[in-house]
Structures are given as C-alpha cells and as structure tokens.
Image (cartoon, rainbow, N blue to C red):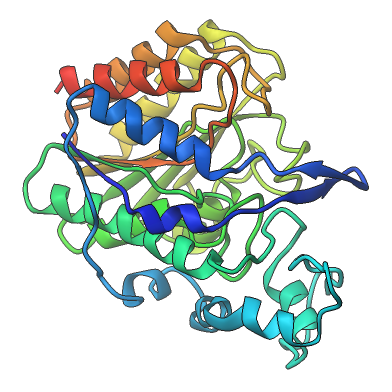
Length: 341
C-alpha cells in the first residue's frame, strides 16, 4: 500500500483561532503531518509525491468561485491589512442571501464560516497539494491498487460545497469519492474522524451514487454544530444515502466499534464498489480535541474491520492532533490495514 504526501502541504502555518471568544493556539500544525510521514517511512511504506491533477477535480465538488477565491486571497488581504493582522474573517452573512462582495474582508466572511481557517502566505499551495495528495491515492486505486493512503494536510472533511470550516478548505475525501465515480458506479465515504463530516454530508446530501456515513459524538459541539444528526438522511435523489452514527461524549471502544459495524453494514447494503475512508486519529482518548476514548488496539481493530470489507479503498487523512499517542495510533491503524490486505 503506497502513501502520498507533498512537502508543500506544510506551508499552511496557522497560529491562533478563536474558540468561545478567546484566542487559542491552533492545533492543526505542520508537525502532525511530519510525525505521520516519518512513521510511514520507519515502517517501510513507500511515500511518493503526488502528480498534479489540476484544479478540475476540486471544482467538481466545490463551487468554482470558492476554489478560485483562495488563489490570491492572502495577498489581497495584506494590501490594506494593519500591521500584525491575521487573515481571519470578522464578518459573516449568516444564513445567506446576496452575493460575494469585492471587498476582501467581506469575501473572507462569505467563503469562510469561522476563525479556524486563517489565511497564511502559503495556504493556497498547501490546500492545493493536500487535494492532489488525495487524488494521487485515488488514481492509484483506480489503476488497480487494492488500497492507498493520502496523507492530506490540511484536512478536508469539514469543507462544504462553498465554504471553509473547522480547519478545512478543500474537501479531500469528497474530491476522492467523486473521482472514484470515474470507474465505479457506487462509492461509499466512511468518516471515522471524531467530528461530524459535515462538509462531506453537505456535498453528497442529494446524491444517490455516493453513500456517506459519519461516526461522531453529539454534533451540537464544536466545530460542526449544525449538521450530523440522526434524522439527516439525505434529500431528493439522495434520500436514504446519508447516515449519521451519533455516539455519546466519552464513549469507549465498544461503542465506537459497534457504531463502525453498523456503518460497515450500511455501506455493504448500499452495494458500494469502492470506498473512501475519512481517517481521523482524534478518536484517541488523549487527543487534544478528544471526545471519545479509543486506544491503540482500538485503532488496529477498526483497520481490520474496514479492510475485511474487501473493497478498493482510499484512505484520506483528516484529524488527529499533537497528543501523546498520535504516532502510535497512526502506526497501529495503517500498518494493520496494510497487513490485512
């Protein structure tokens, strides 16, 4: 099983975001990707740089104007920004009608829902190559590999059709799932990050060709708040093709694995021919954003059960922050998954 990563993904270096009205150190740091990359190399994985698949596959799941906004957004912000200002939106239209304004501060609020996706000098390059990493893993599977892993950073599963959210800009897993449709008629996206995959839900909510299932605790907590409830099952053609397995805050491995079993069964009932996994190690008990209690062996068992589905599988990295067990959890899942193929 090959892995893909590009050093340009390290260029996004957010310093702070606001939570509950207070500035806090931003947990989505380049070091988390470096740690996982080094673990992969230490365990004999081949780690390749992705080729450039262009912007088309990204725009296939995102509003093209949204994608284009990020190309020069930081440079535009700096033109009139006071010294020391951070590229964080301070104006939001709420439940919106209207249009994206020309003013950069208004445009930031239009395309970015919260303060967790600050613009830095190399943000666009990082998010672009994060998506290309996902596409490289996807292409590997489409070309016959049983599985491949995209070390996508920044993560993506909170990014909606036309707005950034929860550390995420481009929805790498959604890009992968849609791209897989170029070979397979039915694709499933299984999200095992601890937070609701609200962006993926938004993107596929009215589609019947991509089944989406997310495991997460109460969605009314940060960062998703608004999506991920059990009665959200899709609409229109997509009715019945979204599933939210809602855990309780503090649940342990038994509850998480039971929810995973239900999600796997739902994917199989759908008849998925290929699978994307939004892989978050923030299910760990000691993760800085911990909400449930999964340990090393729990991650290994999750890997065994997902691998046992026998589907062509693209693993896309989502959360998992700089807690004590991050490397061990990533190692347990990824080596177990590779060895279970």
